[in-house]
Image (cartoon, rainbow, N blue to C red; front, top):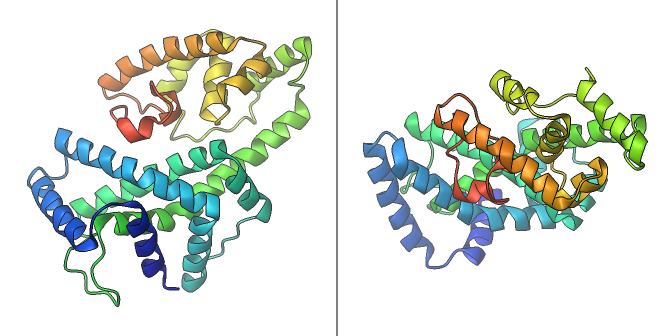
Length: 281
């Protein structure tokens, strides 16, 4: 089946109303946002709404393997080398946590590209004359998510490999050994984090915190749920949340000053990308 047609059918099954009505609404919305140069509070509201609507669609496509399959098909058509391991496909099918992690990355990448295209006068058009006619804005955006999936998947897979290696080096299961392992983990020069997430300002703020707080933050960024962080650090779930909350207060102040970008996992609520991207800077 053609990729655009398959995405169209997936979106139509989730979003209410007729496609023609959605296209008309989307065109009016983008025309209004263009007057503000796709900047400001109005665009932020639009972006949040788009992400909120896209989330259940992407999560379903990740669970079914559709997103990976379409990305593989797209890469093959363009002659790009790309491979998704079958173990990763099974993990994404069975783990809601892993689906959430990769979905946030996909949404962030796709939204960045989407906004750049809008400002450049490219992107979605209501009068698109493809083989299946015009598509609504959500269908186009999900197509962008397929486009960026390759990079998001590679980052996600690399992080999993890094953590697997770390777990072979350090003992995270027993009290004393666990504490020694975390201490070494924080000092290990081979411990790699995406530079986009841990910028200089972010690291400066994090370095001022207690070692346990640093560990909570780093494990949160890597996608570990509170229960697993509590076990790894020999803390209670409440303590994990309190340490993250105190650190988050300092981060939001820096974000208001437009000095840093706050990783989505550290926002006030777990599904933060659905609600706010005010930390972006």
